[in-house]
Image 1 (cartoon, helix red, strand yellow):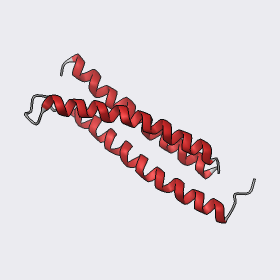
Image 2: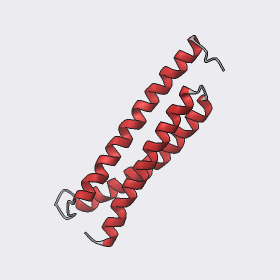
Image 3: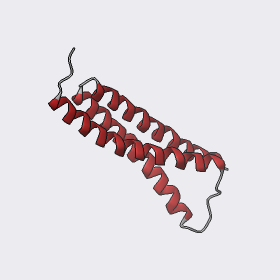
Length: 110
């Protein structure tokens, strides 16, 4: 794997990891009833997710389905991170909606 490709793959891992971390921060904020902070964390997560996805798309376009890009364990690891980050983001959005509904019915006591 060339240094350029390795750096590109690491860019996916770092941005996907940041997405996942921010999703869990959003969940913690929602659990605490701080919905503006939860939404802010989700918006931050979306920014990192877009970067990771753009990098992935660039790799796919460069390969063009012709096997030009060598498949390595670190590449598979990066794809795994991105898939988990995307899933975390989708589930976090749903869970925030549930927390908001729950909070409206049973307000959290200090």
